[in-house]
Amino acid sequence: MSNSEKAKGEVRYRTVEDIPGVGPATAEKLKKMGYSTVESLATASLKELTQFLGEKTAYAIITEARKHVISVPFMRADEYMRIRRSVEKLTTGSVKLDELLGGGVETQAITEVYGEFGSGKSQICHQLCVTVQLPREKGGLDGGALYIDTENSFRPERIVQIAKRYSLDPEKVLKRIVYAEALTADHQMYLLDNADTQLKEHNVRLIIIDSLVAHFRSEYVGREMLAERQQKLEKHLHRLVRLARAFNAVAFITNQVMAKPNSFFSDIEPAGGHILAHTSHTRVFLRKSPQPGIKIARLVVSPTLPEGKECLFKITENGIEDVETEKK
Ligand code: ADP
Ligand code: MG
Image 1 (cartoon, rainbow, N blue to C red):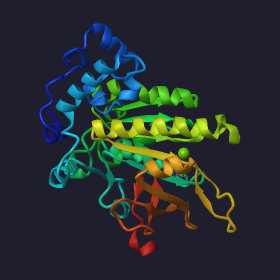
Image 2 (image 1 turned 90 degrees about the vertical axis):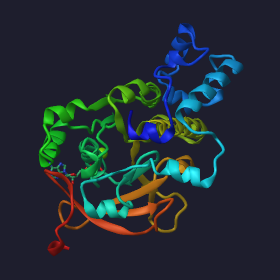
Image 3 (image 1 turned 120 degrees about the vertical axis):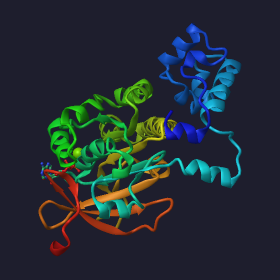
C-alpha cells in the first residue's frame, strides 16, 4: 500500500467489482464510461453516472467508493490539514524553478505552463517524466508518467538523454512512461476518460497534457462554438483534477498564448478563457531570454505563494537545469 493510500485510510475494495451492488453488468457499464478503478469512482459525479445507471445505484456506488478511498465530505480544518500532508512535490531539475514553485510541482492539483513557441513547455514535460521516477529523497515520486501529446512534441530520445543525467537506465525509464497521441479534442477527452486503468497499472504520478487547448482552439472556431468548447474544456479539466486527487498525481498542462483582446497594450495571455483560469491552480508564464538556451519563468497565479516572482533556468542536453550564478 502506498503512502497516499495510508493517508486516506484503509482501501478495502481493490476492484470495482468488489463494491457491494456492482455485478458484472454494472462493472462493464462503468468500464465503458471510463470508471475501471475504485479511485476514479470515488471522485465521479452523480450526474455522469446517472447517464447510464439508476440514480439510487449510482449514489450507492459513489458513496461506497468514497468511504474507502477518500475521507468524509465534511471535516475539520485540522483533518483537512492532515490530508493536505499527503500532497507531495516533484522536482523540475532546477533548484531555482523548484523554489519559485514552493518546492516543486504539487500533486493533487493542476500546474499550467504557458508561453510562446519554443519557450520550453514541452522540455519541462520531458524533464518531469524522468524526475517523477526518482526516489523521494531525490525529489521524485517513485512513479510513472502519462504523456498525452496533441502537437507531436514527445521525443523518447530526449528522455534517454535526461535519464542519463540521473544515472537511470534509459530503457527502464521509457517503460514507465505511458504515451498517447490525441488526434482530436474528442479523442483527447476520450484518452483521459479512459486513463484510470493505465494510471493504476503503471503507478502513474504525473499526468501531462501537452498542449491542453490546441485541438479545442482549432476545432471550435468562432463565437457560436465558444460555449460548447468551454463546456467540453471544463469537463476535461474536472476529470483531470479528479484523477490527480484520486491518484495523488501531478497534473501538468501546457498552454499556448494569444494576443489579449480589447487590450490597449499589446499584451499576451494564456488561451482557454475563464474556465481554465478558474480551474488551473498554479500558472507559470515562460519566455525566452536574450541569452541562448536560457528561459525565464514567472509565477503568475498560485493559491499559496506570492505571485509575480521570476527565475531563470536553462535547457541543455541534460534537460532543465539551473543557470550558473556567474552567468547571471
Ligand atoms: P515549447 O514551449 O514550444 O513546447 P520546447 O519545450 O519544445 O518549446 O522548447 C524548445 C527549446 O528547447 C528550444 O530553445 C530548443 O533549443 C531547446 N532544446 C530542445 N532540445 C534541446 C537539447 N537537446 N539541448 C538543448 N536545448 C534543447
Ligand atoms: Mg511544445
